[in-house]
Image (cartoon, rainbow, N blue to C red):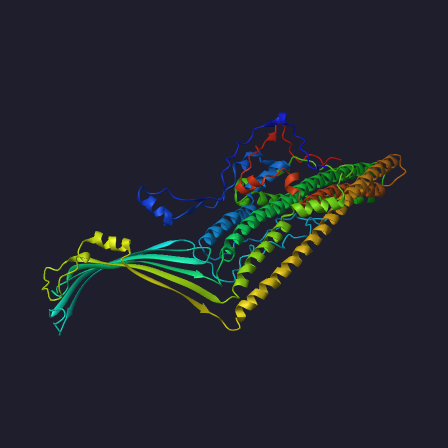
Amino acid sequence: MNYCRHFLPIACLACAAPLFAQTPEVSIEDPAPVPYVGRVLRPFQLQRRIVSPVKLSNTPRLESLVRAGNLYLSVQDVIALVLENNIDIAIQRYGPSLAREVLRRAEGGGFLRSVGTTINPGPVSVSLAGVNVNTGGLAEGSGVGSGGGIVIQIGPTPPNLDPSIFAYVNFAHTTTPLSNTVLSQTTSLTNDGRVFQVGYGQSFLTGTNAQLTYSSSRGRVNSPANLLNPATSGNLDLYVTQNVLQGFGISVNNRNIRVAKNNMKVTDLQVRRQVITTVSAILNLYWDLVSFNEDMRIKQVALVTAEKLFEDNKTQVKLGALPAIEITRAAAQVSSSKEDLLISETNVAQQETILKNALSRNSIASPWLDEVHLIPLDRIEVPEKEDLKPTPELIQVALLNRPEIQQTRINIESSLINLTGSKNALLPTLQAFSEFTNHALTGELNPLYNGRSGAPDAYFVGGYGNFLSQIARRNFPDYSAGFSINIPFRNRAAQADYVTDQLNLRQSQLQLQRSISQIRVDVKNAVIGLQQARARNENAAATRVLAQQALDAEQKRFSFGTSTVSLVVQAQRDLALDQSAEVQAMANYTHAKIAFDEAVGQTLDVNAISMEEAAAGHVARQSAIPENLPATNPAVKK
């Protein structure tokens, strides 16, 4: 049932385009680390990550298909150019990278950010008749099509999961005048001090926060009253807090990470939706261009026929075989045929412009692209019968393949995840804490000490090693533990958020059911549209055959003098109209087939599209054009 088979054998392929490298269009690179310094800073991510610049140029495939001012396009070449150069797909291609960065942010404890981009329906032809190429389902509906997934954060703020270190250093010299010299035994107390403090803090998904702080303070004074001078004091302190009610539990604190992972799946599906939508739109453009070209050929033949009739009538009038009025009638037919041809040529020119814009990133800004003409290489083929699966089976296939349904279900799952956070916010804030501190003191004997305070304890006399040993032995420990509770009265904000999230969830569930029902309607209508399009094409073909027979008969009668010029002209008009109607019927069939594939969710499979290549923006398949290049579009297969 393939309506766009390739009629070019492999043996006639020439001038193959080079195989394009499979490198991703969107990339984020870490810079090369500076020796030693880079290795030290790498765990703290102080270096800038670099995003690759945007690509505004076309791939070599586009220009490789140009010969002698014509751009020769097969269906597969059109699809490849769309995947590589179409801007709508390129925009969506950034979605998964943005979602990965949001996940990276969530894994560090940050808020979620909205990164969704709406689906662009793509270009439309100059004029469309017959079936509607839009399936009418979920093109702008559920999922992240309008905003980027579930990104609203309600409930307790997740902990900051990135550990941190801090350091504090202070050097000071102070001079304090004293009026009482009994204690310090000096009238002016000077102190040369230095303070060192370093700490490490980290939060965990359980709602636990721990901070370990080490501090050391060293001072030298000019007083003989101090036993130790200089003296070093400090401590090692561990402070732990634990959320017991609100903010407790991994399922509450990792909800943003789980939602971010779901949003990554949603953005992948969003790219898939954009590829399906854009490819369907471009295929409609391509087959319309085929039909416009064929219609133009029909109008050219009609004009040649009208001009021949006009010349014949002039000869017959000169011979006296026809009245002069027949020249006027034939001239009117020529004028009418020229007008029809002009309209058809305008449609072709405008359709080429639209298709060029869809296949290029810089549109017709390139002079060479603006000047070339598009020559489609494929034919429209309408099968004699439709080999369709039963409609219920097609509906089940659509429900499995349509990315809109998958997006909606993922977002409902994300809503349930977020609901745990808004529910947890209803609880009071109860926090348990404990603190463990080890103190230490050491120093050298004061050379100015006068002995008034007795002999110093040898335990405290020593250097920095003695200071660290006291901390390690926990000679001077502190312990404390407790809890704090905060119970808000009424708590209306949290209650409203919880109910709002439940209401939104109910809406999403109903929207999913509506989408499922709409898909059933889409599939049934697509099946009916495809069958009717084929039947209309059969009728149009039969009508064209009868019109051709009527014209042949009228021309024979005219040659024997039993008909009139007006009847021959009318028969010619009828044939031209019926030929154009047949071409339009064949184009309508392609639209119906494209809409059917989109409704069932098989656009990618039918057109052999790889999502890996679509995501990378490079198609591995080589493009080629035939040796004997047609100057115009091949005739639509009758």
